Length: 278
Image (cartoon, rainbow, N blue to C red; front, side, top):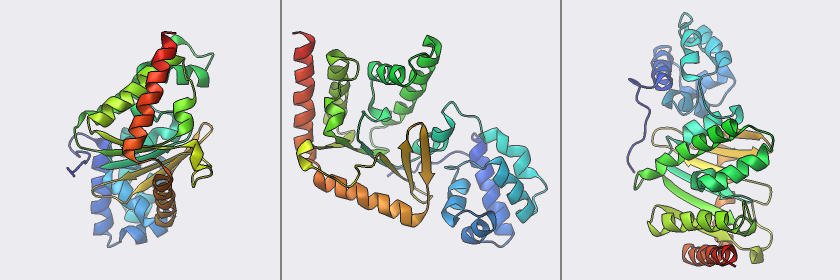
């Protein structure tokens, strides 16, 4: 797959990551050794150096002290800290934009990367029923901006596993659902994404507890992102990521094949279209 990297000449976060690598190597420390001093994993250090995870102010203080960098990281860490996303999703969104492969399980709603504007609007209105129109419009714009990564015809690989509940839950009415599922069909038929559906008939499956997003990178360790009500955790521990990867693999084994899944999504979209005109 094509390499996806932040450019140090244009990205403050990538510049900080490069400087961190240089300072670490100058100090004669491995990523694992520096991670132990910072109380994070070696993978976490690798992600910071690759620019897929930001250097927080707390870590910047510790890095400056350990690597004797005279306050450089504290002075510069704010340059890469601005984000238009909620705090719990900021790092995941930034990593997503750099991933060479994204594998995601959605148990209840269409994943953000695959949502239409109308579907996203209904989701955000449900989340924040008293928000102003301006706030909702900003949320939608940010969500749709993330979908720009799908304009590349090959990268990242996006493989989504949807619970059948995603297809059956009527978000915004039949017209919104027909458009939303039709959009997914278009992306599948363009061979831009792979989608499988776990049918209700599959019964219990490996991810009944919630969502999973797995992200792989060219020059950094993989990450897993899991969410809850208004919360999210970006995970880099290799054993934890491996566990979530196995969970995802078990899901694909429980799901309909991509061909069968496409047929189900198409037929469901057609049903919504007929309901719209009934």
